[in-house]
Length: 166
Image 1 (cartoon, rainbow, N blue to C red):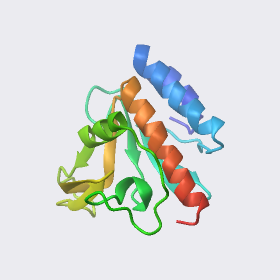
Image 2: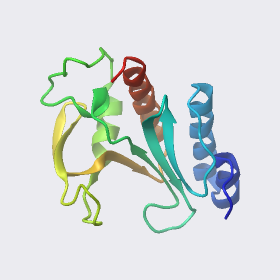
Image 3: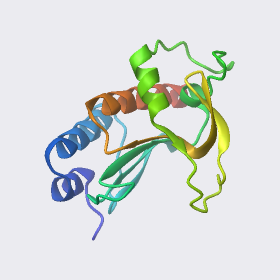
Image 4: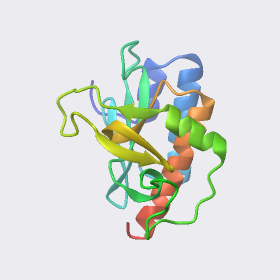
């Protein structure tokens, strides 16, 4: 498959709600001036040359398909809240309980894939500490509407961190 726009890949391989939600997420990124470089099925989405998130789309029923949004691998506001204490570089975001619950339910635990993070590390996600977490601390696999809303919030916070030089 030649490199193409993410919207073309979404329209070609996803159906129903998955298709609509993936198109919504791509539109959210574009509306927030976060470019999506053309690719085949995996995007390292960057803002000012720093990763905001990763997206994979292949339509498969096997994980990570049919589509997944991963958090970046940086620390920043989203991942660094340990035991309710914000790091010095942390912005004062208001995150509702639903967003926290969704993020925590999608903690990305190491599956010993052979990557650099194996066997996983301790990471805090919005104030809650998890063990054996992958480099990308959160994975929204085949996300529903609430998970996409949470991913959009994650992207908003990450972009703010990047603009602040973190």
